[in-house]
Length: 515
Image 1 (cartoon, rainbow, N blue to C red):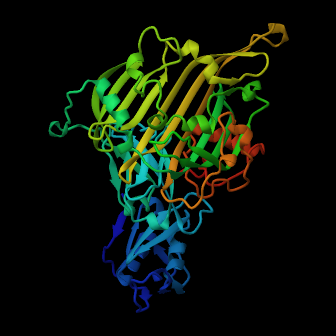
Image 2: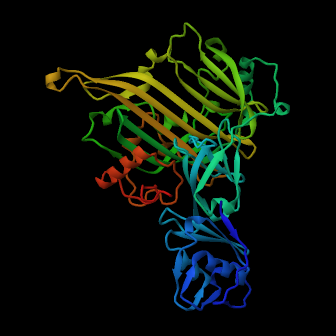
Image 3: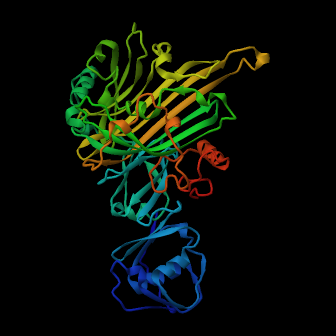
């Protein structure tokens, strides 16, 4: 927890000029230092006492360190700079409150701030893909599979409440004094639904799903909005990454009651491939920007979320849980016997009050997998054959401005790949190949000045790795991304070292990771 220092400790060596101290330029007030040696927290206590200013900070400043400052006249900022030499800090002022905010990401613009941490359960297990957002803003991001997140925010948002939520857990709200002063360790409590708050519906699960589909006009946006998002696509051969593509994209999201397709524009990106390691870099499966956006089940429907679904799928109520502190039905579905196509099985999460679909987890069912090859495989290198092993998907929505909005989508597709030919000619090779793509919406603009033109938008057959042109050093700069997990982080570092992707400083490296 951060410390708010308001303790009176007499100062024998510190003299403060008698000026008004509650203005925005408090950091420029003059401080006269009368001795050379201070303990860091004692010096802050003296500043607090004499300036009537409140400091908020965590133990990351190492408060028991010995500080050396030559006697003389300084600004308050210069004194703080002398204290905070072991990390890069920003000073956030609100009245007489100064938050000492550690910034581990370099070269962030002056008006931007970094919030980062890890989301865990009470048992210290990571909570994968937890949603991180501000209550009164469209800005948001998501944790990675290890529960780690990094969130870059503008100065106008820093007094908003940070909220962390995940299926089956109580949401946690975090004040600015905490999220700006330290790297966060967040422990979510498992959600228990009080009996008095349970909504009991007499309908069977089929009726709930159909009513959810019919109520899309009330539950989702009825006008076009403009989204910014981060997208990542990777491929792996066995346990090794062999290619990476990342992009910042903009989406013109058409109304949920419109039949018009969404338009996607690529803003910038980077890619890299370990071509020497694998001949499978050119294996292309279903994915990319266009197909990633089609996972928006609430807009585009699917075999299991259309009026025709009742004839082809079985539904059953599993249980109720909490999602963002609201009761949520979990409805399980699977293909009926005798269906001869690549259908799905999975879970639908439906808000008990509004009947909005707020999350879907689904995969090509065992019954449908043998029909999936043509749909999943777009291009196979000459001399190879590929058999689909699985195709799994997730999509999630966030409630903002009185409607549910697309927030996150993820796909994971696996193949068994074999190379034909005689063993003595290099044949007989086989491996597992996995393609993963994900994107998170990081901002929503309901009144955009800009429009995406059809001629500049992404097409269904576009392959991201072929579209992206590396954008140069400081690639992400101050954009929100999904933090890479350690194996991918190692691959990024390797590709940078080999010059296959540009160097950049805002993706956490091992050296920049918080203690």
